[in-house]
Image 1 (cartoon, rainbow, N blue to C red):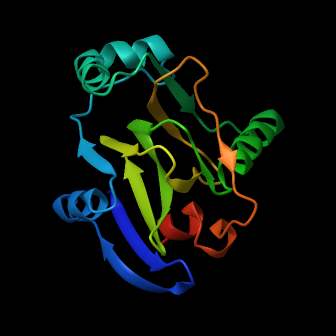
Image 2 (cartoon, rainbow, N blue to C red; image 1 turned 90 degrees about the vertical axis):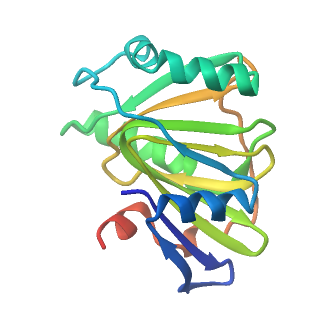
Image 3 (cartoon, one colour; image 1 turned 180 degrees about the vertical axis):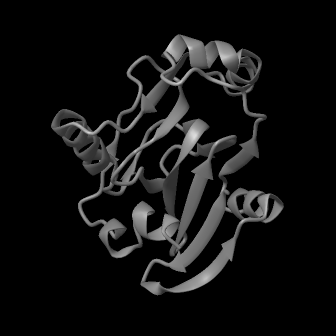
Length: 189
């Protein structure tokens, strides 16, 4: 279930808004310049390759590429494994995304499976968007945000880029991210 939670950036203890209504989420995000939509889900193999994911969603991917001018699209998967190597890889990946940052490019993500939370720090508020399977979120360039995939990441997502460098972040020195509820805390409710 997709969920939007909004707080003042100065008071993470007080929820200003919380909804799982897709129309309300779409409207609230549009008000801050963020696009949100849903795609029908397609069955994927248990451990799909990037090519298999892109082929399964070819029509939708082609539509986004045509509308937004992306030149590089890939799919990434994080599937839990009970090994020290996987736990170290997951912890390192999570740590990278947990600090507030911006990009010179839009950040478009489609969740083909699983979930993750994009936290958008805009106009004195933090909007936490729990994206679940079927959600497409487009964070505009220069929007301050962070991403939490939880301590046991389990998702498949499609990423869109305007250049071949892919994901490049400019991290903020003064981040509020550590003050807000994490993926694990929000999804435990």
